[in-house]
Length: 162
Image (cartoon, rainbow, N blue to C red; front, top):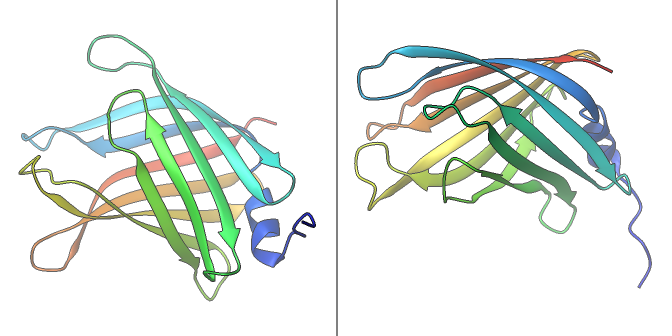
């Protein structure tokens, strides 16, 4: 079996490689209160085909540091970006499938996760990665409502450290 060769989509992912600081603003809890947290993320490349990111977010409810792991790649057979996200604060593994928009700046990753209102059910989510420039990017997380509209519940701004 030959090693795969990076394609344009794989090269797009490489711009996420590096050390990042972020500020996250999120609506958490049933009262709709907005919270702000700061954290870091280190993203590395696996052979130019995949990226792996490990993030930390201090200041969880019990004072513990949350840790998360992201994998992203591109599967030419599916014509889609694919990946996963797991975090120390939950038991759900988020499985991504997504596409770049026509500008080449926004990657929308669709996934399914636990319902906010009924933990026995699931609902559609999407994480939207927007690359502004070499040192700035955003992550916006949304969940689909019963009427089909999308509700943004989190926005993180990432700034490159190195």
